[in-house]
Length: 142
Image (cartoon, rainbow, N blue to C red; front, side, top):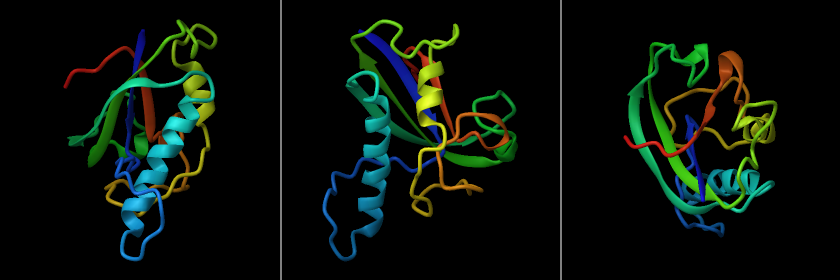
């Protein structure tokens, strides 16, 4: 089993709410974002042994995890680890998570939930100044 970890500023709280019910719109939209993440990962491999997501409020610095737009601010960050059976399934041009970045680029999200970050565009974006999602090869232990 090969493990990867995802970090995002997008509210991907798995609530289990899969049907519309008046008064539960926020929880349904959080679940929709979570389902979108799992479906994007599932384009290349079936995610298994999912750990998290865990939610932490963190100071964002210029370490490259998120875009410059978020540097110097405290933001709510969601992160989770998942396993896949295929070795190097996300490898692209020597980058072990390159296909994940490519697959998540410009995928629509639902904003205005419990995230603290404000996005210029309602999309996942793994590059540049507006980067709001980041993947690493391996498990992350907080």
